[in-house]
Picture 1 (cartoon, protein in one colour):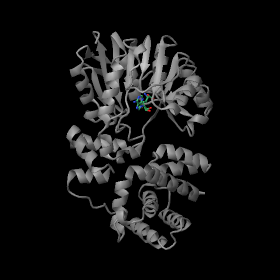
Picture 2 (picture 1 turned 45 degrees about the vertical axis):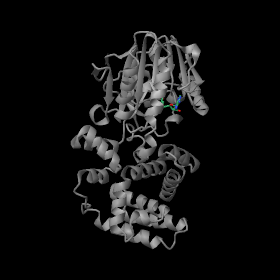
Picture 3 (picture 1 turned 45 degrees about the horizontal axis):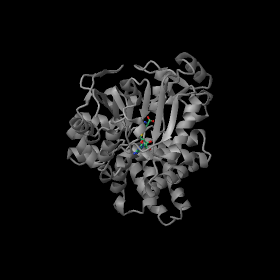
Picture 4 (picture 1 turned 90 degrees about the vertical axis):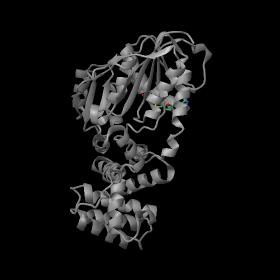
Length: 440
Ligand SMILES: C[S@@+](CC[C@H](N)C(=O)[O-])C[C@H]1O[C@@H](n2cnc3c(N)ncnc32)[C@H](O)[C@@H]1O
């Protein structure tokens, strides 16, 4: 039974390595394709997330227990070793012998019968030595990088931003499960009613500590299979994302320039209580379908998904909107706890983002009417995608200025706020609220 969970996990790790897939999406489709359910689906998920969260540390163990360096091993074999090592080091309920044997079988099933001896020897050695603390380098950056499996460049950036102690707290938080926060669809139901409906389906829910219309769920299994979900009772949304919409106080004509999969537009619609109109734009046609389906499920009628590149001006929208949301594509380094593989993005691939973000902000700002609000947000914590983009924009546009805002969790006197998992319990998020005071 368990072998199929491990086989699925291996397929997912292979898809991520070879095809550039994201673990969460690849896992969801592999679990569906392999028809895993219950404990098998859970184990496959634990293994994939666990390997991603601990990859650098696991490779350290493999390296110490193998005559070859991890990077010299065939990638498939290394993935099999990581899967085995993760179970031995982190999953108490699986006997080490089972973790070793299943990994050996996995190697054989993938035509690596000759290498299965190596898998056996390395994993047995890891099992024997697992209680001895792994030797770590003295240098702080290197030590944190291995301990929490984050690439060295990111650890260095975090230490520069936060200092070593808080950087470590952030890294630790990234390897913990994030709470599953959902937003109650107040257009259709109430908090109490939804809690009752979830309970009837065996799902535990508790009120969010500081967002009155949000719940934290546990024991959900596949969310999409719940009747409460199909009935449009809620959508999944991190508290940080909800705060970005609260900071905008959306009303009247709203343009959400980077809207898919639609979470912030849904939150705006619910705050606007059926009034006004929301243009929910995205550059990818296939994502519009997601938003359309979401809006239909939630019974939102004043939201209009549209195919529109945020960098390209629509003349008919010039100074036409009361609220413009600019939730730009970003490095996503604030949501590592939900997408653990984001940490392994190549930093060189991130360097072009600020230019795209600035171009979208520049264009979107032209849609804001005088007196209207412009909110720029990201789910990252890097200043070059956050403060540096908004500062550059404000320097060149004196008709906009930052405006203080207050939120259930905290206030911002300066008009901008960075949220952090280790400080706020939310995803890492940046929010900047600006107001237009004059024409261009
Ligand atoms: C951070 S996500 C938005 C999340 C969304 N606001 C929500 O809360 O569900 C960024 C989105 O921007 C879209 N995007 C990327 N480049 C774009 C562009 N030039 N114009 C419009 N949308 C773009 C991506 O397809 C992606 O869906």
